[in-house]
Image 1: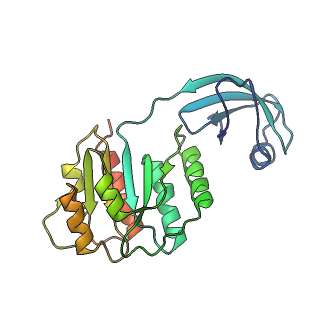
Image 2: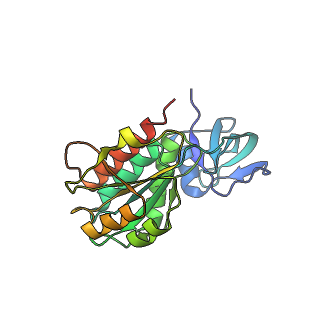
Image 3: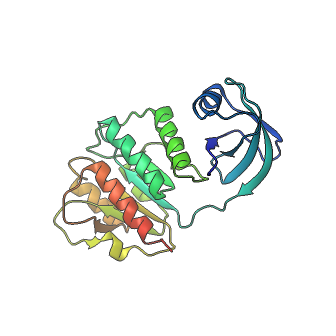
Amino acid sequence: MELPVFYAKELQAAQSQYTMDEPTSKYCVQVLRKTIGDHVLLTDGNGSKYEAEIIDDHRKRCVLNILNVTTVPPSHPQLTIAIAFTKNASRIEWFLEKAVEIGVQNIIPLITHRTEKEKLKVERLESILVSAMLQSQQSFITKLAPATTFNELVQSCTISQKFIAHCLPESKQFLLHVVKPAEDAIILIGPEGDFTPQEIELALQQQFTPVSLGNTRLRTETAGVVAATLLAAKNVE
């Protein structure tokens, strides 16, 4: 049976013991009914997984002995989605969860001319990233960048593969047909109402490739998930 995985952000490789915080302890001891002698896994979200044994099953401060550490190399290539967050928080939270499960390593909240939501509840969003990491049994937490303006991002981006998905009736190629495997990639996903023509023109001037995500018009969060799926599919071995 697979061992349950818990997030231990502050855990260091040299530690021989670790004490869970109260919410994690309660979940481990009261919900999962783990007791002294049971084994669990911990991850710091930076590539290290720790197998540990419970030595004190207190529901407020569960203490574990660290038995061994396994280090996982970072995923390659690095996939980044820069997306205009929607006004409806539940929709963008759904996108974050699915993007992590698919394997996106970096998410950038994008402030465009038509962006509906610029102020973010970062703590809430980061908790979703942690939950999705644990659920999908990954060892690296997806990074949520500070909100960035469209102009700033497109003019400073140095990632080798750069794409912009937009809805204007211009010449575009299907993303799956143009993305190269084993190379870092970023894609820009616009708000409801799409990027402005001026924003699209600026991106093209900065060598972003215009792409299509299919034959239907997608909501912002759906477009983000489709883009993540297509980018990840190109790198499946």
